[in-house]
Length: 259
Length: 318
Ligand SMILES: Nc1ncnc2c1ncn2[C@@H]1O[C@H](COP(=O)(O)OP(=O)(O)O)[C@@H](O)[C@H]1O
Ligand SMILES: [Mg+2]
Image (cartoon, rainbow over all chains, first blue to last red; front, side):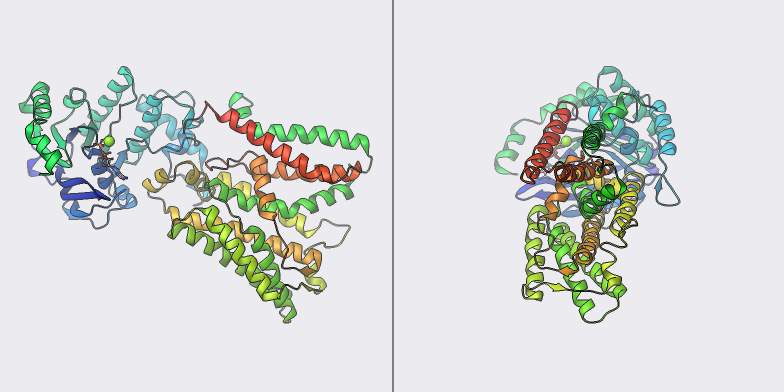
């Protein structure tokens, strides 16, 4: 990729985060360039979702800095993150199950007439259009999200993020509840986002699934990014090896002695 | 969209309550020719106006998954403040405005403690309920304050042949509440807080601000209720409004709003208030002992809750 000369859309340095006595993130460094897809893989509990929530402003880091377009952002809040064009599909999907599909897609960015009157028909038209464009199969966008299947719910979360996102899109295990066909559609969608110049971070526990669309794979372990592998010079098997291979002595030492 | 399965689902509680109401109305008008007279209905509407006001305010709080147990004490304290102002020869308007401002302050106080200190609304408003009631007793020395100018008592009854001010106030607030709950962000966010507060924070909404505003709304309704009952009784008593918050909760829950929040139903609340009013009225008309009243209300409330719960189960995941 010829992105090296460009400015990273988002860059984080030495991010640390603890919950009580658990040190979840231990100095994470990451940068993502426009049009680049970075896959974040690693075991359960390695801190992927926590990192994502720091990037989206949900959590503040205990230590470390966040730069968007090389501009340092103090106290990144969800509001600031959205204003900077960062959209996130959370692992828990962040949906209101009682609210219908339209209401969930437009949550926090409702279309109003005269500044206060909710323009439901306008939102419905856009939502139907958006779902169609993204090939998300939801026959009636007026049903509460709680009635939908897991895959459909993930579809709603993705549709919302696509509607919000302009520069950076973060997906935390976006296909976990999806079937084969839905997964393929989603991966294709994410790929098309990068072609539009959007920077993508995709978290997955399935390396083989994201390998094709990712430009770079970051392996996360015990709160650190331990290895970055450009997918161009490597095969998924090789990356998989280094993912597994490191759970050796070094790892167990780290678990036991914290070194 | 028309009348499809979805809209029946959506309006199930209202339809059910309306059905019971209709049966009751038919029965009572068959039993007594007096029942369907305007005089009787004005009576019914007059009785439910206070409960409706409080229930409407409570609905926004319950939509967030909260509760406002201080409403009844707020009603009392507001009335007493108005009474004191009137006795100090303030104009009727300034007494009313001061009373409502005090009510608003009490509501903001509730909201701020709940939001800033992160204590559950039940405990906070249980505490402030006692606090506000205690204040009312201290201020009055436990004695009622009575006899006010007619320009003030007008707000309780008005001219006996026309529509009473309490009914007009309740109607205006009802229309406003329907509009706010279903057509504005402010109303939608009350349900969104109950549905998934974290999701709302993550889309950049200032959840704390909104939360406080719902407790403010609930308190403003208590202020209006305080005005109405103080004017109606021509007296402000330190025991006034006792238990009114629970009557409001009854109407809200019976009307199909979920106690854990997420889904609120203003028209259901209205129909529930109406039904409760008609039941009380019917007992009087049929000269059935009012001993049965509590039992019937309890039975209806439980049935409504059980039914709503059974219907929800297996349909919506949590
Ligand atoms: N809000 C929280 N409070 C306490 N511990 C948390 C919280 N969020 C995450 N953790 C802990 O942080 C660790 C990393 O979690 P997470 O970031 O979700 O990992 P991953 O997404 O890689 O599976 C886990 O041990 C988890 O229990
Ligand atoms: Mg995770």
